[in-house]
Image (tube, rainbow, N blue to C red):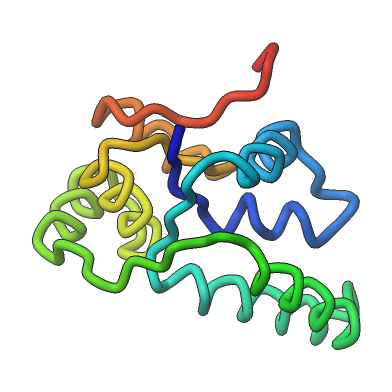
Length: 137
């Protein structure tokens, strides 16, 4: 089943101490399922990696490895969000505009959302958008 991947799940792959069953499930499903991301994902992931380098949590080399890995994944980048819907979702659910782009993309394409963000999961549930759930969660 296709799904939208958000940056929180992606970053869980980058750090051993952030491993999460939903992130593991999303990664496993990528080999068989179509995966969408909004264009902001590209920036969010790179910014998180850069900040982790500045905070000495990671290294440039480790960031480069992850970015090469991500570039090989079958991810479709959506560059045409429905702006008004993103604003409506952000306002309605008190989400950042960035997070609302993930919700809008999942809602527009009627696919599940893979996120570790609590507020975004709650908003998805209120909008009847399925979220990836690991067994037992």
